[in-house]
Length: 305
Ligand code: AMP
Image (tube, rainbow, N blue to C red; front, side, top):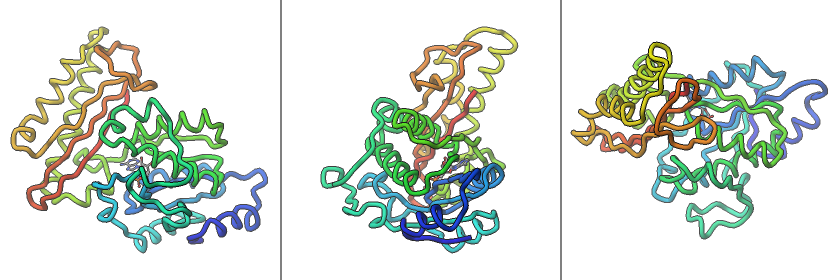
């Protein structure tokens, strides 16, 4: 595997070192601290493409000034070993100056240079709590697409709204790459794997598994209404299912709910009821307060059905 830190090296690899004729490049952008979720995306890319490029870049522009940019776990030596073992062709790990030649202060009003914004869908759900988050994601992913020029790009369902936003971006900026969404990889407990799980003590990792359990109970109710009863089910019933599982942790202050969404898969518009044929996504963001470490960790999860 080649490890590149500069754009020049990547462009040289793509234009001079490999023969691209009739061959495909798959691309997996990440922020590092790689786990089995990332590995699943990478395996799919390696399987489906002649070459696979992975980027590791903790992108400042998607962090608000009060978020965890400095604390975000960075494990480049371990990540590099894992990528070698997965037969990745290139790792691109630039620094912030390489990606943002004019610098990238976290305060948006002092930022200079080009930014990409997908209005509408990036203002909902995650975008409400984190107003400049998707602007950061769409900007850095556009830059990475321009550098790597991948035929196929792989993103996780874990960040479902990110996938939907990027899909709009690729379609409407006419970017020539095919996006693939890879299902969520979970721990045995059901907890969705995330680099931010590193902030949680074992006890709170167990407690956090109830996030998925709540969503699963709503899923079971929808499945029942679809298959057995063949009728719609209303939003309030589903919210109650989720909150019943979460209630003990809400009462103690371990969970603070940011949002629960039961929405149309394509538009993310909230639904008052779920009909048997609707394609929907149940998603949530929960702030978990870990009394052992005093960390508050914002976890997201979702189920598509
Ligand atoms: P990140 O490093 O957190 O920016 O994630 C990089 C990519 O890996 C994104 O497309 C994520 O959606 C995806 N990803 C992260 N966690 C998981 C997971 N548990 N299952 C599937 N994909 C994931």
